[in-house]
Image (cartoon, rainbow, N blue to C red; front, side, top):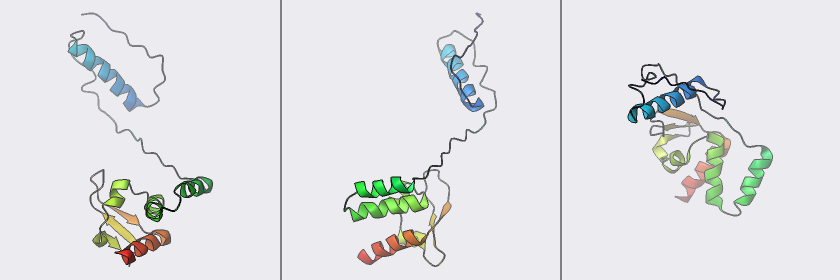
Length: 136
């Protein structure tokens, strides 16, 4: 069996990413019969926190709404997204029974992450939703 020495010329900042890269290398090497097994297989993996929080500046928000022109429905969708952090699918799948106007929130039960969550409803979102309800 030939010894393999790994050397990285790139910086990989997170331990979980490093383990994944090394594991993938050994898995590929094992598939091509260069090593007997993947020694990373039994290494405990830690969850990678890749959550990103980004808010638009006031200038960015104004430019975004200006770019939408006169499309009121699109502006309403974007307003809900900006003020709640809801994903596109969550917004498009909103049902009136999900909304609790008395408590100022909506309960999302079918999210992308399969977790239930409650999203607060501020005055802007309440105004948009009331306007949509009046249209229907």
